[in-house]
Amino acid sequence: MTAVTEVDALIVGGGPVGLAAGCALRAAGVKVLVADAGPAGRALDDARVIALSAGSRDILRGLGAWPATDVTPIQRIHISQRGHFGRTELRALDYDVEALGHVARAGTLARALGERAGALGLEVRYDTPVAGAQEQNGQLHVQTAGGDIAARVLLWCEGRISGDQALSRSRDYGQQAIIALATPVRPHGNVAYERFTPDGPVALLPYGRDYAVVYTCADTDAAALLAEPDAQFADRLASVMGERVQFSAIGQRSAWPLVLRMRTEIVRGREVWLGNAAQTLHPVAGQGLNLALRDVAQLTAVLLPALARGEGDIDTALQRYAQLRRTDRVATGGFTDTLVRVFGIGAGNPALGAVAGHARGAALALLDACPPARRFIGRRMMFGARGWP
Ligand SMILES: Cc1cc2nc3c(=O)[nH]c(=O)nc-3n(C[C@H](O)[C@H](O)[C@H](O)COP(=O)(O)OP(=O)(O)OC[C@H]3O[C@@H](n4cnc5c(N)ncnc54)[C@H](O)[C@@H]3O)c2cc1C
Image (tube, rainbow, N blue to C red; front, side, top):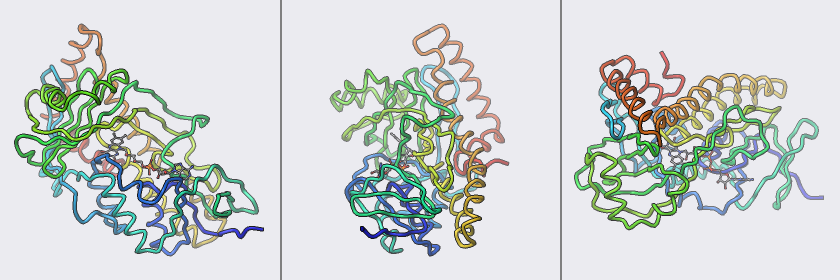
């Protein structure tokens, strides 16, 4: 008979969400094991560049996993739409914060979390896929090639939602995000841009001396955009940005398909789904990981005392967690989806596009003239639902 490893919490998936949850629980003395399907070190090569909100920085600092280097502050966010009037700007000064957010490579964040996990003695088993769990005698049992594991709670952080799950919201945008680093001709001054176009949003995030570009395009255009010569892609970007920014060099491009998937049930018995395994969002306004880190912070706050108190309290705590996450999940998923759809109205229909463009321009201008509304949106983006007045 093979030996069973017994832990308080098994975390399936060692991406940023699984490692953040693992560090948070391990730091409080909980016996945790993380099982990841991939090889050690793969996350360090993740080319995505992520905008981390002020709230995420607070959470990561609290975990001791805020990257010491290779993060770039965002001082201003300029929001506009291509081909129509209307713009607004969010400024760190207006919120009395040192930065609206910070930009880091996903690989840098993976390194910081990995180092913290190592310092805490968090056990991470790589090349260990987990397919499902069975409940036996009040514990969840999983089988892996390296042996069986039994846990009091099981956190699914495997970064995706399998096809047969009930979803409260689901959309295939028919779009992909082309990401790349692009060197601007003039220093970026720590200004980020979110520019809406009929083909989808384009974001420029200041990163080191470069911009991290997230360029949304139709699925059918992605292959051509990846193959386009650098100079042509640089010209394309400059023309989208209304010549605000010119580029002298473009780095390697990659494409990411865009969908919205919100799992209806994020807690079932002693199983919890977190991060992209609970909700996968469009990257507009950079909300996915920020929302996920709030999942982790909230779960830790309710689960730690319950684990210490005993079995009866764990079920109640997890139900409470699901309730507490409802508002932030619904609001953040709805916010990103609404942005994409509202700014997409009229794509392919010039008459409707003109009317919708004017209406959106008026809304952006109104927002710019209304500091309380700007403050509301800015705080939501920085802190999620807890940023609400
Ligand atoms: C183009 C793009 C730009 C983005 N920009 C931003 C941004 O600016 N700000 C922001 O907040 N968010 C952003 N996001 C979202 C963010 O990247 C995700 O929310 C985040 O990576 C999710 O992390 P995760 O740990 O849940 O999943 P993942 O990073 O996918 O990690 C999942 C892990 O689980 C492992 N795994 C999978 N299956 C199994 C299994 N069966 N058994 C064991 N292990 C398994 C995998 O090997 C992997 O290590 C962006 C996303 C995209 C696509």
